[in-house]
Amino acid sequence: ADRTTASLVAMQSDGMIESEERSRNSDWSRLRRLQPRATMAPDPIDAQRIPVSLGSLRRKLGEISLTTLLRLRNLSDEPLRLKSGVQLTDGKYIKSLNTRNKDGNSACYHLYPVSEIPPRTEVVIAARSSSPWVGTSGILGEIAYTNRDQSWEFRIRFRNERRISMRQSRQCQVKATMLVDKAKNEAEPNPYWQIERDEIDRKANNEVVVSIDVRRGGEALKAALSHRQSKRILKSGYLLKNRSFGLRMQWQQRWFVLYPQELIYSHDLEGTRRNTIYIKNIIYVRSLPDDLVNKNVFEIRVVSADGTSREPYKLSAASPADRDEWIQKILSVADKDIKESDIDIVTSEDTEASFQCAIECIQSDGGTTEVLSEEV
Image 1 (cartoon, rainbow, N blue to C red):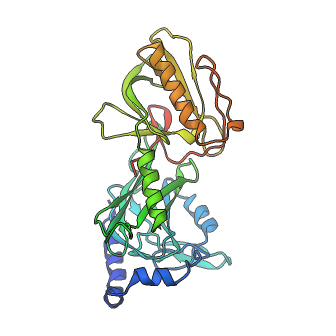
Image 2: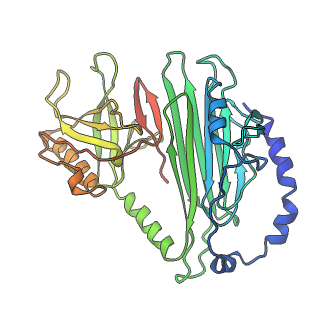
Image 3: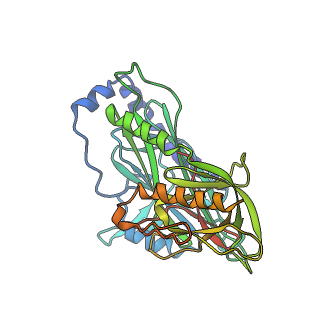
């Protein structure tokens, strides 16, 4: 585990205490109403606020066997403060990396978690495996930031490992949580913070962009309502999921829940590890002929960020009616997110849907790659 980064962050934080005390009693809500929203900083920065050339950084990280590059983007008008995450469970942060800046001159980047992300700024953090040998080490960690008054918390969990079997396991989960209700009255609702992430590639040296922003007033109410609607359960129940390796004769029972934007499944109703298929990533859903093991079979095919089709999810329902209801409900919710001209929905016996989409986070599980998420 990485046990030396904490001292670097502590030294950086000490110089900020005095300025924080001076500004603590400022009327930030009044300033936000008076001042226009600033533009984003032109370049990302490292922990020492040195501008970073992403191109040079990517090339340098490519020389390392296993890395994770986190690009934390603070899109809001207030700073975000580090709460935890200066130590990794597995792997280590890259405290210094010699490369080139955008002008071609020598530069040394410091890529451990920064104690404060300034407003409208992107900060880069990089971690690597502790050992160069495949299967002996990986990257596992969690970073938490809060807003200025610590009423919201933002957690980023990440993992990247390649096992001896050469199967790569990767995961990135983000979550925004309200810790304190700061609303004074109904006329002045709570600011609503949002966190999103997008995975840039699917290689060993992966890159994840995490964006944090805030909505206020009427926009906050709309964002909160949209979030509640996105978590409305459309259908749930047990399905048999086919393992995509060998002769594909093994089926496992999983608990599935369909929401307007995602299809989540876990080992059972109380399962804590949840896998997510995003509706926007689905190419088609269609029924299949009964195989030698199960009946009422259908499949869901998704697409990756580069437009290539991935291994389909092959599922089996308890009855033909249940299978058809799953297909129609998935297609129905997909139809809400795209134009009618972009999708061709026919009967459940011959159903296809195609539209533009993008994949966010992946993990190899038993030879297949799946999309992962955590409730936001």
